[in-house]
Image 1 (tube, one colour):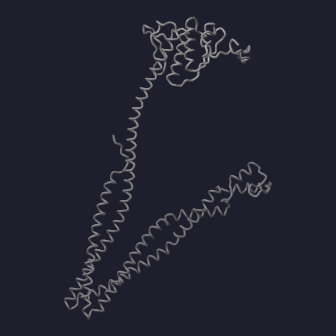
Image 2 (cartoon, rainbow, N blue to C red; image 1 turned 120 degrees about the vertical axis):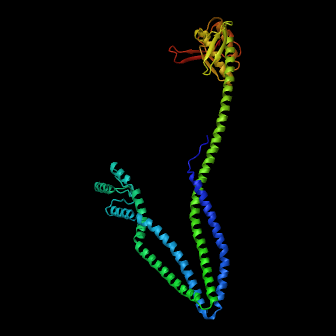
Image 3 (cartoon, one colour; image 1 turned 90 degrees about the vertical axis):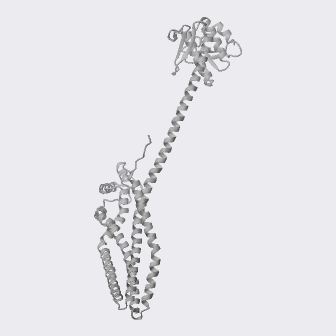
Length: 453
């Protein structure tokens, strides 16, 4: 089952809608931009025709001047609108935060006046001076007498906040005071904006009325051609203004939609990146699981091979050490490496073996592990033949001697255990024999010498 990371699916629909609107608006802007140059040329041609009539030349020139002034004041008014929007946005923040900022600054000033805000001193350090009865000031090294100690206690009782908190409050105080100043200047700035707005509206109205009067003059002129030209001229001006409004309005909407589209794309990209990372991680997990399965099989095969080899070597050593050659049939080792010994009738005999047979099994298992693992560690055996007698003792002694040719074995015999038969087996050049004499309490070694020395 494919897991989907959390995201609102409606974002994709909104993204498509925003992209469609932006594409359509861009086409409208492009069409308008394509038409404006041609309409501008037509306006210029009509204006030139109107100028040919001497009787209306001054009025035509005046109209052009009024049109330029109107265009200029409209541009200034547009810039003013941007400034007004910024004013509204800023003062929504200033005025909403003003009561909280003012109250905070007043509380800080009140604490300053009452001495509840410490200067650059450490309140904990003052407490340390009092609690530990320090005799000298850690700052100036001056003597702290009882009068000074009482003053320190009174200062400590007045301090309500730590030095670090006090420093932080003083840092934000300046920012809060600046915000308060801006908020309290609201009336002045608002009045300035209102006056500016009135100026722009009044000036625009005056210019438009003068232009309307001139347009009415040209429209009612007794020469029909001039009236037609004037009407065409006004229509072209209106058409050009409409196209410019389309460009401005659509561009404003495009900016708004594009900002939202950028947010959507960022959210979707983050989601898709997470989805890719999740898919890559899931693929890695799948591969790792597959590899883990193969590795587990390999480990199982290796462990089975090792276990089989240890079983074979254990049986080989065990069968060489015991004299009952027709009693035992096999040895098994389970997954927890517990040994079981079976007789020729396939009956388990592990719990009923003699002490000699159990010791032989322990030796055989230890030697098999050493050999199969490749870790040829030295082996120290205390009383290796102590519980072994008769023919088993000779077999086991010989087998241990044979093993000692491939690995170091240190065997600690008691005098009784080290019989004449055993001594003859270990008298060759392979073994090194030492006699260790212990104290009566067997806690100390009193001497070491070579046997037959």
